[in-house]
Image (cartoon, rainbow, N blue to C red; front, side, top):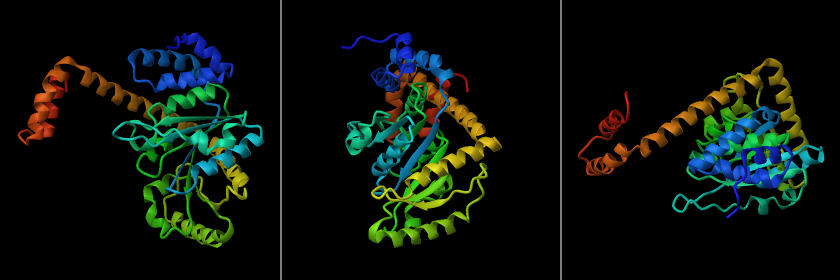
Length: 328
């Protein structure tokens, strides 16, 4: 068993750019063990002044859109510009075994060998919709380690994208052309969250369908309310194979950062995200305290049986348990 680092060793290693220490720190923040949580909080607190200096980009898309292929091409473009890049990817986890494929380094083989890039696969675990519980903390650790751009890839498209939107500066939605009725395949709410729509695989025979899809999405986006950021989400096409549109995507993100930094939205958004994280942390800790309470643990099985048999109303049982746990 590996010896545990001290908080000072974690901090010194991360600030020094030691990737082994960074990886161990991310493993630490992913742990649910109380001792690990206490240590992780100490490390994050010490590193906090060294965070917040990156551009955070969330990337999601419909199945088959080629997220990993796009990220490899986009990431290689960024490192080619001399940017230090961290990629936080979330793999599908089995709801039964909680297993994880953790195959992103294989799917991004070229980028994984890039000395300026750091790829960290994490299991989705119990976090809704594919974002690891500790992604926010891993993001801060990567910032403290000096990474200038951080990409957060989600699993598929679903309600969990709200979580990603709540931890990044720019939210990129990848779409396919020629896959049937594209507008049917994406919920309106996800399109409304996007800061840009990118139609991938726009090469060869797919160039014409991609242009048509672009026109359809542009028409649809005009019907949406104007965002608070005052940024009008553009629709673009790209090809990871040919490289078309890759540089333009980074230029879009830079334009967004420039605009929102000037009008105050960039910092306001981050402040709101911090408060939302506080509320999420409070809910998680209260839930842990509730289920760890000895009185609740003793009463819960019997009441669960009554609910299972239809003999008790779930809402009423919840009120009873909360009443015995603490003041309402």
